[in-house]
Amino acid sequence: MTLIRTMMERPLDPGYAAAAERREAAGLPRSTSLRSPVLVVATLAMGLVVGVSASNLTAADSPRSAARKDLVQQIEDRRTQVDDLATRARDLQAQVTALEASQLDGPSGDAARSRELAEVVGALPMQGPGVVVTLDDPDDADDSGNGDPSDEERVISSDIQFVVNALWASGAEAVSINGNRLTSVSAIRFAGSAIIVDFRPLTRPYVITAIGDPQSMPTAFADGAGGSYLATLHGSFGLRADTDVSRDLSVPAAVGLTTRYADTVDTEGAPTSGAVRDRDDEEGRP
Image (tube, rainbow, N blue to C red; front, top):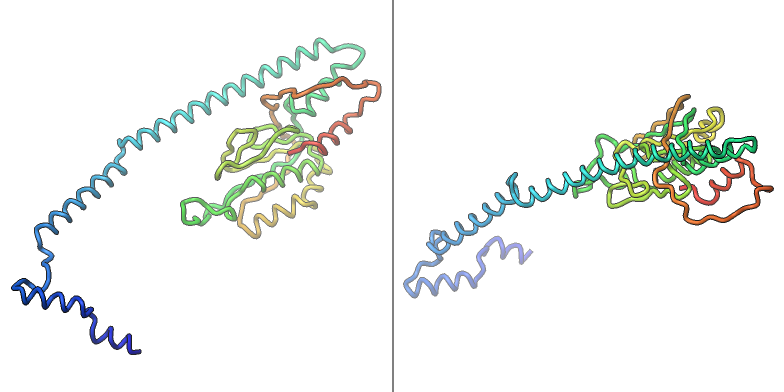
């Protein structure tokens, strides 16, 4: 209470009062006027510097804006080139598959076996019934303070990984995300706030297309971990998590399939198609 009373009764520090008395005794004003020429000039100079800096930062034709515009244009150009090359790669892959079929066609059934394996590894586009899962951020997502939605208010890579794994476990035979076919070596990762699949960035909404048995796969997914996870995303975090069953879906062929290593096998004991799919699921589904 003593400190508060002192501050209320004597708001001016005694040192300031003593300095004012010394100036008055020397024939000077008790305080320096705010209209001092030096102070006015310094204030104007600081205001000029701040104004010029703000103008340079906000100007539409500033070097920073021009550099950003150039980078955005380069990104768009490269993305267009990648899309064109991906389309050309799919066309070439289809031609290679057709040539393989023509060379292997015969009584031995090698052509059918080759096509079956090509479908398993993702070298051929597939069409049929299945499930479409759509994930998206809420429209009214709050900002975390730095201009970006917090992790709890947006779809992250682990959400897509979980849903894709649940679809494989439910019996999916082919899966794609926003038109990108997944294979046994596909990777779903994040780079900052962006989600990438096989080094290609995805844009919202995230549409996961899975082809499989229309009788068993939708039920297995809805009643299993996948359905529970989607319910949690929607109910607890407000994310969009829609599931639609369709009789006519299509997934494209994978782009950039590369043989990392190969070895000869005993064809007498070759596994059936179901065994091949089961092994893929166990050893390398994303």
